[in-house]
Structure formats: C-alpha cells, structure tokens
Image 1 (cartoon, rainbow, N blue to C red):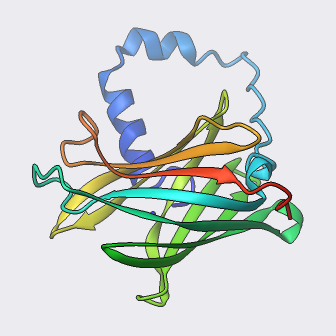
Image 2: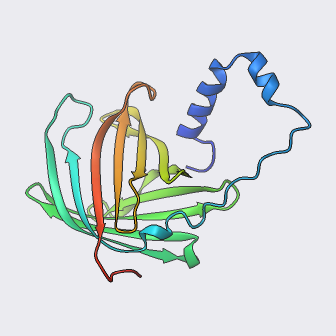
Length: 198
C-alpha cells in the first residue's frame, strides 16, 4: 500500500485521456483559463487522532472466488507526527486466525496535495512498497497503488468513508482487470474509545 502521477495514478490518467475525444480535450485546455488552486488536505486525518476499538474482517484468499472471511478485534492508535504533516497508525488486533500487529506511516506531500500511505507489519519488519497515494473529497478518502499479488500485478484501492466524530470505515479492494471490477478483501470499522483523543 506513490509520488504524484506514478504507478496507479499515471495508469488511470493515461486511460482517461485515451478515451476522451480530441475536441473535448481542446475545449478544456484554454490557454487563458486560470488554474484552479489545489485544496490543502494537510489536516484531512485530524479526525482520526486518538485511540479506537477496531473490528476487522479479512478475505482469506483474494481473487480466487473464495468467500471465506476471518475476523479480528483490537485497537488502533493514531498520533500526529511533524505537527500534523504526517501521522502514525498502530494496529493491534487478534482473532481465531491469528494476530496482526501493523503500522501505517501517512505522509502529506505539500506540492501534490496528496497523502501517501506506507504500510508495514511486525512480522516482515519493513515498509512494504509501494505506498498508496490519494486524498479526500467530500468526506471520503481514496488511495491507489499497483502491487504484485500471487505473481501478477493488481490494482489496489483503499477507501476511508462513513467518517463521524466517533466512528469510521476502512476498505481495501483488489482489481485484476485494470479497475473495471473490484473485490473487497479487507474491511475495518473503528469506534472511538471515549476520552482517548491524543
């Protein structure tokens, strides 16, 4: 779970441009049109600072036709780093299928106005490349990357939604057909533990 317009982002942009008629592109590229300013998203994760009760569901064998899920419960702790220009997420959950201890380092790029989500689990002991990159719009976060899964390249989408003061939802999906269809393989619902804001 990229810097601006590399990997997944560049693939999506090139596909979108390939299907647009030339006349439409010409109309949208007026040399006199002022560039719209990029939204400052540096505080987009402020809602999540604190400690949360986490319920996680994971699809055991993604992209195989399997419908077997396993469940975990535990906590997620999120704290600001660099005065909010980054944050660190610590996940600690367990269940019948085992234990997951992981972290995510989220970094805000002030030039591109995008976040990169960098993931690591304790078992591997290193950050897994590549990061997912994206941002928030209308209260929903979407982040994308391209990864290798079972010897083939897949697109990965990570969505943060249903954000309130006391709860939020995280969902990861894979696509092996260039983004035409997506299979959800990871769903986490977090509920804030009262009085546990950092």
